[in-house]
Every structure is written in C-alpha cells, then in structure tokens.
Length: 279
Picture 1: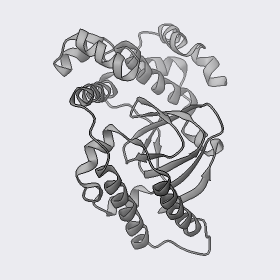
Picture 2: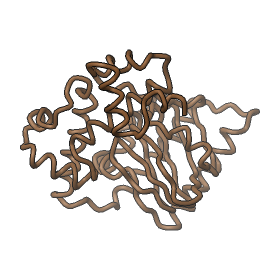
Picture 3: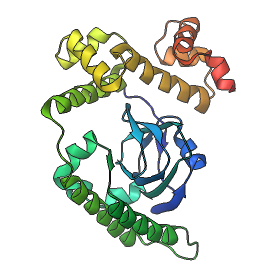
C-alpha cells in the first residue's frame, strides 16, 4: 500500500507569480504529492526542502523542477526567501507528451531536481515567468488550453536544453542515489506492514550493512529513521487532515495500540499525537 500524501494540483491551467514568499510556501510545510508540474527559481534567501524524501538546500539562482508525482516539503529557512514560480495543472500536463519534451535528461533531472544557473539564464527565466504571471493573473483574460500546452512545452524544452549541459555525477554517487531512491519507494509501499531494516535490505537484494551505510551517506538518516520519517509524515497528515481518533490512526498504521503509537510518535516529533493535533 502506498503512502497517502495529500495531493496538490492547481486551480488554473497556468498559475505564475514573480514574487513567492514564505506565506505561500507554508502550503507545502506538510509533505504533499504534486499532481501539477512546477518550475521555480530562487531569487533571494536560503531554505531547505525535501524532494522525494531526500533533503536539499535551495539557494539564490537555483532552478527547482518538480514533475507530477514529486513528493515535496519545504522546511526551515535561514533568511527571507523569495521565488519566482510557474505551475501547470495536471490537466495541462496530461495533454502533452512530457517525456518527449524532457527527452534524454529525465534521469539526470530526477537525480538533480535542483541545479544552480548563471545570472543571464536566471534573468531570461524570470522574464518568461513574469509574462506568464501577467497572463494567469489577468481576470479579464482566459488562458486557452492550447496556450497553456505551448507554454509548458516551451519551458520544458528550455529545461531539457539547460540539463543537457549539466555534468553527470560520478557512477559511485549515482549508484548510491539510485539505491536510496529504490529504498524510499519500497518504504512508501510497505511501511505500514514492515518497519524492519532487514526487510528492505532483502527486498533490494543487498546486505543490511551496505544499505545502512549508503542511506546514511546520501540522506544523513539511518534506514530505521527513514522508515520512521515516512510513518510520521502519514501520521501527521491524518492528525491534521482527518477526524480520525488517535486509536484509529494507530490501527491504520498497524501499531498494536494507541499507547505504542503515542510513544513512537513522541520519540520522533517531541510531542504526543494529541498535542500535535492541537498545535
């Protein structure tokens, strides 16, 4: 069973802003799975984000490309953060051949969803986003589906050309990232039934020692901490987004009792489930 992250789509074919601040980013403080396609450029400040459960630092001039299906969570910032942003709804994404537009850089993009850009490219992207922002925010103007499709294809083609120039990471680093992505995928499918690290080592066909050292070097978390991270995200979503009782949430996550669930939750969050719900 896959984790039930809240699904996030856009209400319009195109939605763009030139000045996205923390107030809007707070929407993504809880982990969410995108249905839309989002492209953003950091213009000011530094912050941390989790993309497909791997941690990244976002800095000025960084390009962030989030394809549909991406699990995203924006975390703490170190200073005031501003982004320019262009998003395309799932309906728009569904009408184009996304893989054709991205071409042969898909694997590179998945491995490096955040890359740094030179000033001139950032300037071009900001101008393009500004145009999309004028169009999408003009209430007297309706964006036709054909226009949305062409805009998305245009920006994805630009990203493909940008990523063509991004150097491949060395094979050893890529192999470690691949193992971690497979681990995270496996955890999101089985975490309710299995929270033993050995289960995931066996599933991936590698030794527990190799899996543990790889996970630690790439994510900074142990295998057990990664399993707990996914479990706690699901618990937080249920606590904040549903009316389920603590006991119902505990049973839905396959804990033997509400008490056991409460101790597990407090160990990783620092407060009880009920205290977290009331925050």
